[in-house]
Image (cartoon, rainbow, N blue to C red; front, side, top):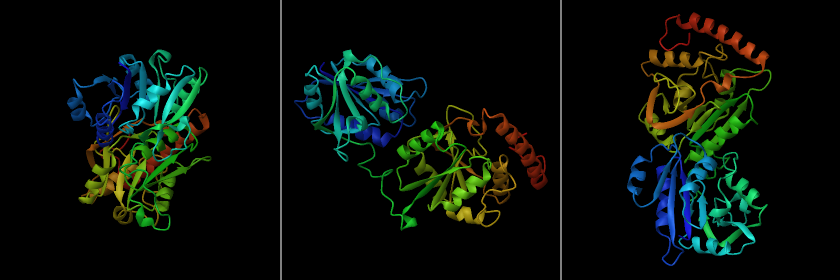
Amino acid sequence: MQASILIVLDGGAEQALRCLTSIASIEPGQPEHEVVVVDDASVGLEALLARLEGDVAIVRTPRREGFAAAATRGLAACRGDVVVALRGAAEVAPDFLAPLVAALEDPAVAAVTPITASAPQDPPVAAHAVALRRADVAALPPAPAGLEIAALCAERARAGRVEACPASVVAAPGRRTGGARRPIDPDHPEAVEVSIVIPTLDAAGERVRACVAAAQATTEAPHEIVVIDNGAPPQGFTAPVNAGLRAARGRYLVVLNDDVELLPGWWPPLRDALDAGAAVVFPLTIDGAMRHDFAAWCFALARETLEAYAVAPGEFLDPDLVVWYQDTDLLERLRRDGRPPMLVERSRIRHGLSQTVESEDPQLRAWIARRIAADRAAFERKHGAAVPGAAR
C-alpha cells in the first residue's frame, strides 16, 4: 500500500460527504491508497458512517479528543508507506495524491503539504493537509485546535525539509459552500444573519478562543461574533449580555457562554424553529448536564423577541439580576406569556458546566457568592420562592 488518506470527522455531514466524495473521485493512475476515517465522537454522522462500513477503515473515539489525539489513533490503523492527514474534512483535487507521494521519495523531505486553492501562497504551517512517511511519526504532537498541522510541521522540520507542493491542491473546508466565511458588508447590517454574543471574564483566554474557533468553524451563515469582556471589576453576566445584544446587527441573535462548543449543523435547526414562531430556542447539550426547560448557556432569538421582551430600552435581561437567575427570570416571563423557550434537539452543543463562574481568585469567588445571594433575593421579590426551575 503506497498511501493512507487519514480523515478525522467530528460532525458536519455535508462537509464530510463532500470530502469523501472528492476522495472517491481521485483519478485512476494515482498511487494505490486506502482511506482511514476517525469518528471523533461525532454528532449526526451515523448514517454516513454506516454507508462507509466495509469500504474504508473506521476508527471511533469514546469521547471527543480533538484532531491531534484522534489522528494519532488513526495512524495506528494506517498501512500505507505515506500517510496524508486531512484537517477539517478538506476536499481534495482528483490528482492531489501523486505529487505528495513523489515529493517524499526525496529523503531530505520530512513532510510535504498540498496548497490550499483559495490561498496558494500560504506556508505549510497553514495547510489543511500534510503528508509524511508513516514510519517517521507515531503520534501527532499536542497543539491548540487549528494549529495541529503547524505543530506537526514544526516537529518534522527538525528532521528535514517541510515543503509546500504546488502540484497538489485541496479546498479549505467550507469554501465551496461559502457559508461560514461569506464576507459581510459592514455598511449593510441586514447582511448579518446571526450575531453570536459571548460574554467572558477573559477575552484572551484559551476557553474563549476555543469557543470562538468552534463558532467560526460551524456557523454556515453570514454571521458576526461579539465578544464582551466584563473584565475587572467584574460586571456579572447580565450587563455584558445586554451590551452585546445592543451592539449586535444580526436578524437573529445567539447568547453563548464562553465554555460552550458549538457542533456542526447547530444553527439551521434553531433558525427554522424561530421562523416557525418560537420566541426563544436552545440546543441539546450532549456529554454533560442538560436542563430541558431552558439551558440558557446557549440560546437564540429573533430581533422581534429582543424588542418584545426587553425589560427596559436596551435591557433584554433584567439588570437587577447580575450574575444568577436572569435565565430563570426570562424563562418565567416567557412562560407567563404562553411562549416558553423551545428545546431543539436537532441542534447539538457541548458545555463545560459553570466554568464561566469558576475562578481561582478568592476575591472574585467571594464577590460571585455575594451576588448570587443578592440575585436570589431580587428574583424571589419579583416572582416568589416557588418558581419551577429556579436554582436553590
